[in-house]
Length: 108
Image (spheres, one colour):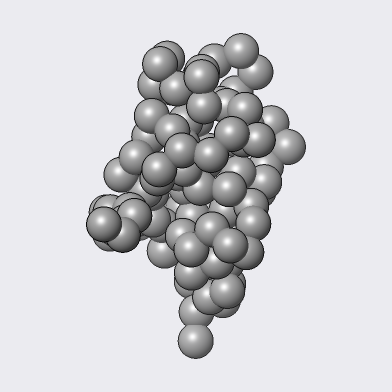
């Protein structure tokens, strides 16, 4: 049976009021998060979410659904080859292994 990973694509909207324009980077991005957070946890310092994902922070091991920064990983390759940034290496202060995003200005 082939290994597959499901994705949910989030539609991002931003609000504009007459006095305040607030947005985050993701409000002007396409954002995809894999639906396998256990093996692709969010890591910030000692915080790992979900907590049971601590066993999967070590990316030298391979598990079904795990996204790794290698071109033989079909999920990583599919998004990065289309210009998406991967949360596994996008920020200096946190790791979000299930996160891929692409700025709208980069979309053609």
